[in-house]
Length: 251
Picture: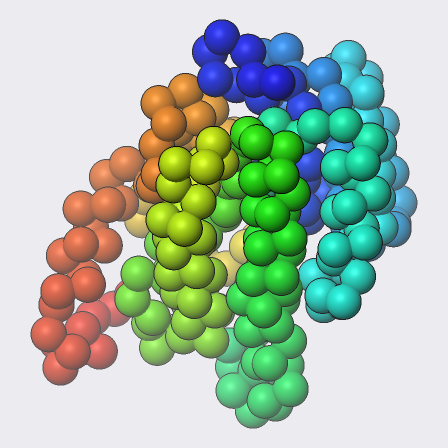
């Protein structure tokens, strides 16, 4: 169960090697989270992440999970929830893709969409049903500011995040009043291994800053969290920029 500060004592991370997710797990362990499940494709990186979190004092277990295999999601998540209540499910998997290559090779673009959107719909609905069955819990969905308005430079990724964001908002409305809380997190450019080869962007942030924002959002019971907060105003302006002008902006 959550403690008196509304922070979870047990969490399931879907996307167990995500730098943002692991930063969030570390922060929550420091705030008394004691049970962590890391779900992801079996790999040395997943095992190493589990060892690092265990060293912080948490009981950590790994489970094989593949976003691109939705037929397995119910079984995989069912095994986790069968071991005990989960206070927080953090949906953190996703891929950036390579816009230039993905435009030329549609199957690559489809993989981005299937991972970021289709896989998230399957996992999100499965997790939400399990949380609703136990009668409490939070589902935190890592969306992206890129989903607010797709840019020429990354419209494949951006469109997949736009779909994810709309889905998560709708799911939150559907679960309102059930005891299950859905929080959508919209970071801007995050400095991670995935973005290491990309040029820095204005208002860039870090996994640790996102983790801090997630904790604060959970304490407040927020439905939407922007990281950094100033990004909210920027994206509101861009969302209402006329298309003819928007396509000429150097973004």
